[in-house]
Length: 305
Image 1 (cartoon, rainbow, N blue to C red):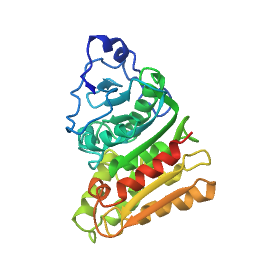
Image 2: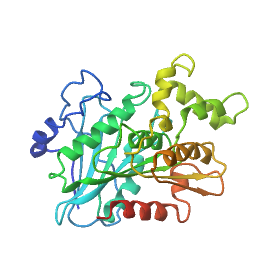
Image 3: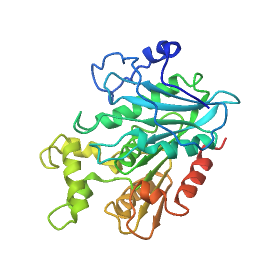
């Protein structure tokens, strides 16, 4: 494996990584800086010898960074974009390093995304960043030996919300074959309601996190922003199929996904919801026996030619 930060030879590429234009991109974003970020530390488990890992900027903000794992030989590979969790207010792509490594070992191009947190910018900045990172990698698909017409997005917890929001953005994205979420916050409105005085500590924390994501504004005062945050409100027939995994008794319950499934069923988009006993959440749930394998199998089925 060749593992480096962005060097002189990569600055020309990084300098032209432009954010996606359009209604969801932040207006007036400057041309991204080519400055590198540290590449996530990886374990000693072997990767294919043709694997390269580098960090790139896809925007001007320090959080607009992504690590790309790609294979330099063979035919163009399908890609897995991974979005970390952290209540939208924290977390980092480095937390998903072992997961990224596992998908690189399976032969995929892997992109782990950092995004602006709720303290940096309110919604929809987080969705915009994910869309921009995807558009950037697809634009440079040849460089990354990637098939731009075969990719999935995998998100965890708050990152699962961003992934699902990407999945229902517009009437589907070019090349997006599927969206998978592990403990995804599908319905911020439901989380807000569940986190009232009767909720447990995690539910109350999630309620505060959804308000922070909306810019410190509640659903009544900022109905337009909350409507934008609600994944099911944007379902359409062109959306990619989805898979979500929840624990039966975690603080992001399966019925959030059931709300989305009902809407996607109405427009003819397939959604699969899997549940596990217990309370494990996000990466802890992903480590439960059979969960990672099930997600990998679903992704493989979506990315098959």
